[in-house]
Amino acid sequence: MGFENIPGEIRAKKIISGALKTGRIANSYIFCGQNVDQIAEFTKEFAKLLNCETACGKCLNCTKITSGTHPDFIVVMPEGKKSIIKIDRIRDLKNRIKIGPAEGTYLVVSIMNADSIEIEAANSLLKMLEEPPQGVVFVLITSRMDSLPKTVVSRCQGVIFANQNDIEDIDAELPSGSDVWSLLKFSSSLSESSSKEAERDKLEKKLRILSAEFFRARKLRESRIVLNAIRDIKKMANTRLLMDRMSLCLGGWIDG
Image (tube, rainbow, N blue to C red; front, side, top):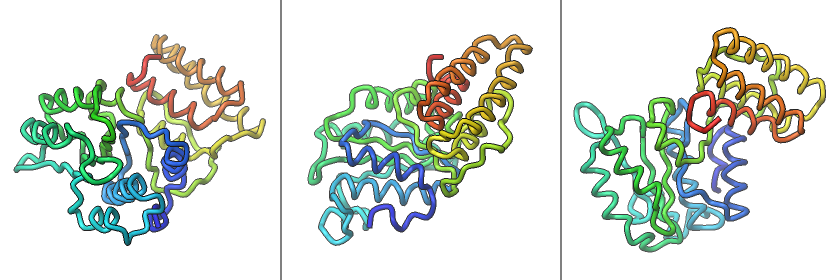
């Protein structure tokens, strides 16, 4: 069970499965991708695995999460004609989670279309992300990560859902500028390590061109971020994670 029924998304599965295996569960995640309905199903399976080691689908925790009746799996949806998440909904959420899990090991809060949150509600949510109750995990689901407040993004671990299998496409075109979603999609096209020397050479050349473009545009901060990524890639670290970090830095979500 678990993620077996979720097609593709090998990368996201590896990240979350690794966190479950090591017990290093973040307090808050942003699950970003274009197929938000599939990401919602992934989040539901994540909640099962947090409260059942195999997500068996048969125990009380699993069956309640599946049916949407588990007190420790809360789904927050945009509401009203404008389809936004309002401050009253976040205040209600704060009251519901303050004592932590009621029946399971973890209380999982899934916030659908999190980019639709109004600013006052986002500020209230930020306080919960900064000081979450014990055993509470937030999952913000969005197809537009760059529309979320930077303060909220900085408190979360990002997981990209590229809607593809884990294939290597080092020859794919590297987008120019700081279009973060396009950069992250390029990162998702890389193999997990891209360890072959020829692959790293290709990537380095693409990054040097990008750095030069930024430099010519007098975007010195951005140029330095790309150069730092080249330096780290040469150290034979995880190429794809480094590309993720570079993309997020260029978007201004992480201090460069």
